[in-house]
Length: 173
Image 1 (cartoon, rainbow, N blue to C red):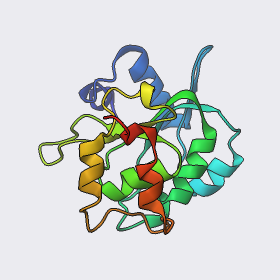
Image 2 (image 1 turned 120 degrees about the horizontal axis):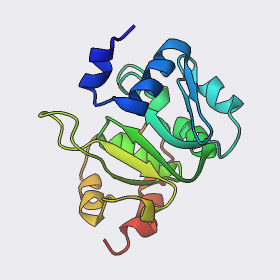
Image 3 (image 1 turned 180 degrees about the horizontal axis):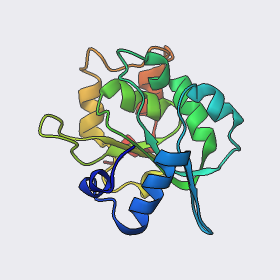
Image 4 (image 1 turned 135 degrees about the vertical axis):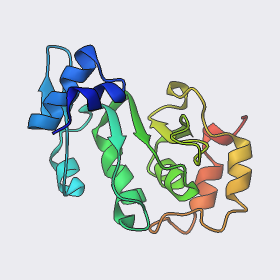
């Protein structure tokens, strides 16, 4: 159980700290206008049981694609997209091209997130609409994708490149 010092070190003081401690202790934090829930375990079953359009902010933090590729697939992100309501954002530490491609193929608009460490230039943020992103992936990113050796998730369709090329996100950026 984290101490107050631990939650403060993550900038979780005040109401955010209370919410974080509740989530750690009981798996949820409910208030009049918000509900925080921690989902551990079989995420596919959790997503299937979740009502459509029920999430506003998702922190996607499973093991790395190398250790749990099913959770970084088009299929997993499609299930996640189903539970995202208008204006929702998905945040993940991964900046991998295959992760971003899987999110795009699942129907998300995808952008650059903040740096998570000195070793990682950008994390990833996804949304239902490109207008909801501060720094959407652009044509430069797409052009690099076409030269990447590890650009696709394990369940990418054969026409993945054509699908991404047709996205408005890459049309004029």
